[in-house]
Length: 183
Image 1 (cartoon, one colour):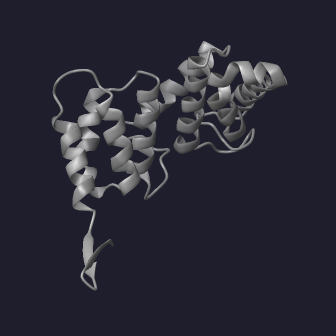
Image 2 (cartoon, rainbow, N blue to C red):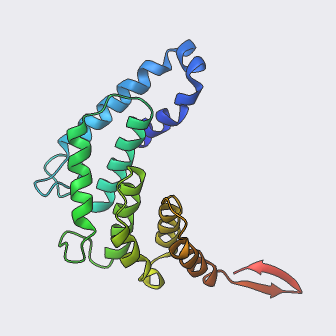
């Protein structure tokens, strides 16, 4: 996923890529990556690190974000694969979903939510629920939520302001020898 994602990031430089023949390699890497993802889906619909292994929500969210990036870059994608990944990520947002990593439930739910946001399938009810639990989230999850919520259409910015306020409460600037530093 990393290799093919890096190739997708280079697609805006199409003339340079075409001159070097690298454009064909990007399409091949994306196609192979999507095929590997499809082959590594476990019986619960989660993407695993290899075929026939137990999948997890984090890897599934990463795979779905890659799928969306490939689609936005104009690469041919299998819509069925995208729907399948999106559906299991929607299920993982539920508080009673049983396949989240113990101790990392909130982080994984936020990863699923932000991946769905990348695909334009953000559910505002889950945004509100998870935003209420921001104080219990790791910093990265709060930042991911803020990014996803900021992209929502509409004028109501209360949730994103609340998330950003939560992030700022975690920033500490102290003084050492009369000079401020980030702690």
